[in-house]
Image (cartoon, rainbow, N blue to C red; front, side):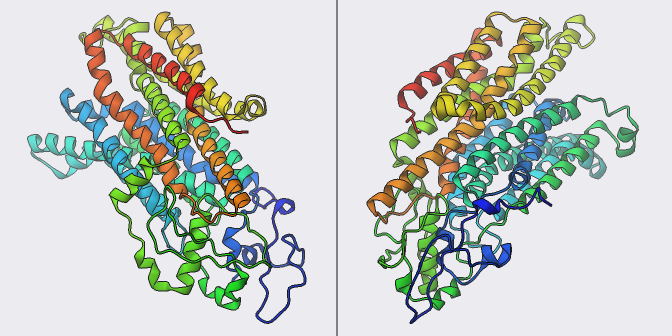
Length: 569
């Protein structure tokens, strides 16, 4: 049980609020007279201001369990990447509709992702703010992969007419692919916001590194499961086909790790135990209200701040702690004020457009990075088959040229597996490099290494050299999954320290909006790649332009990072 125990030495002790009529003799923030259980510590109704205190330090085991959801998500992503083309071809989808499949999900994600992120900032579920959204999107992912891998079999069992069977199979499989992509892309924002809400600043960095590590391992396992020949195995004969075996492993992995994630770290509900505020006078609290709304905050009624000289400043619990504490205190005194918060698409877009310059620059660099990464990843197996192995995908299926192309695609899948493993390993290397070159240096290095590696692959397409250089894909992957969110954490910490120093009561941004704004860049990159890269390949007449385009965009991202990303200590 030591794996799950919290770090008791680093855990802050609760601040005591005096009872009415009693004189305060001492109000030391680290008093040691508390002997209750951990649950009492986290959920005690004695204090209303507890949510404004820095969260307890989390053990390594808790952080690993929290990151298990990234293993399951990437496992399912790898299965989709390996089998989406064969499945769509097997049900008879016309080639002209391929781009439609890849564009629907990112377009929906780009438009709706900020809404989900901002809504989670003000969710008042008794289970917490983030977990209800994570659970809902997790179930949608499971439904999507079920339809994607089993749609053809379901339609064949229910529809007897052959013409109708083909049509319904295409519709069902396409719907499954779009639904899975939609939910899998959406779920990343609430997962990151959940981590930020329940962890201290040091644990946020550790948690993001574990997320990157488990993401790489999950992708590697997914590609390995997809590379095995299950069709001729006893397991394949038992379940019916290779696709059903892969679905079994995917659904089992995702279901188990999603459940572990949801119960890994307790999440404090917004507004829980508000009646406890009646136990202490209002003057004993520092209300964190504001007459102004900052970037990422929703329009709400102003609350006059009440400041007591006898109570010291309280450290914010998380990025959205100021807005949360204001919401809790206001609702406790005036429950009907909850209905006054209104979330509209217009107000949300306004908050994103009016974000500070350093946040906007971070979003642009994230867009450049993901555009370069997706340029390479979506067409890499085709590049291996046509350019490295010199095969022909349009030749007769029994010809040597087509068999050579298929062999190149298989080796390309092993290259993607190398990418996943190197991503997991590099997530640990980052921790050792961070004290020497900082977050901006790591960010620049990730883009630079990827840009140089892909340029060498494009200029010198050799089998051994290409497989070795696949490790740079993992460097870029780990960079994109961790560094931008670490920069957000640093920016928020600087703002918290500045506001505390100046005594400002300006409301903080919600974590969900910040994470969602970054995640929107992933969807926008998918849209750019889906619309532009196919036309670029047709004009160039060769898929080698894909790798060279990825290199060019990545190196341009290096320049942008050097000039516009703000350095933080």
